[in-house]
Length: 389
Image 1 (cartoon, helix red, strand yellow):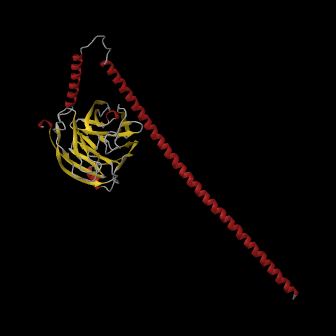
Image 2 (cartoon, helix red, strand yellow):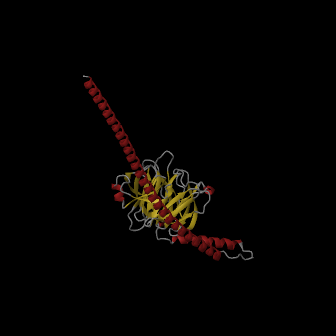
Image 3 (tube, one colour):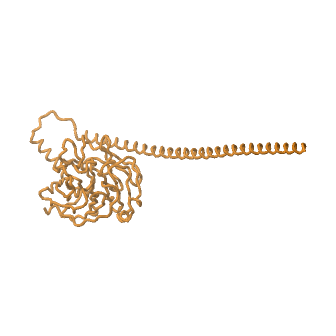
């Protein structure tokens, strides 16, 4: 009996030791599994971080390549502008020789000044055979509403191009390109647009597209006109208008420091300065070189002006009120002195939603592309001859 008790005791002791060993082994296995899991998580995290680092390096290298190409194009542009300045200096030297040490009769000076002014006027009267002016607004079509309350939409005014361009808002570096007005109308928002990212942000609503170039206003410490090649995606040229102390050109759209317009005679810049801040000024520009051909101070006030456009060398300034009413053409300025405010008809736009943030005339279609509180509108114009006045 005693032997049986001893055997039972030994058996129980062996069973307890066996169970303790099994428990120990299970704890060790669990610890190993925890370490394997931790190692797997760390390995996965390290692999993910490595992939992200690789993507960042690839992106930075691509950006460096783009910046290098942009810098090269900028240097080429600087070189061409330096050449242009040198040519202009050479021309000024040939035009302004040493003054003779003789007295000149005042009447002779007045005659020479008058002759120069007449030559300048003749220069612009011969730019085109266009003598049209606005008679009335024939029709209005609201295409859609897209984007913010302020912006610009326009059509490339070069012959044969039907592309439409959207500058949404007052400050961005993206232009939305549509193949046609129909594509723009059928699109859902801006989803079907080709996005053109500019090397610098545009400001205001004064931009135009002309002969496959986007002419846009860049504003920081100065107001700069930039000519951007849409097909080849680079800045062709840029220039600062040689005018000190710019002020917003329109009282009702203060975001626009300078407004650009295209008509039958080419590219125009509409602006205002602190020296003549009560009225709007006008400059004729060479679209190829961005040189200024001539400048005028108009009699059109800035107060309550909302936008403007040019037709056949005549500036039409559109006015409204702080409490939006009916927009109207209330002031005109013709660089050839063929149209005056007294002769021009008072043209009212159909009552719409607010005030026009931009009005862009297309000379091929005789349409005005308008942006009114986020609505894109087309105005069909009726023309008559200036000589019939």
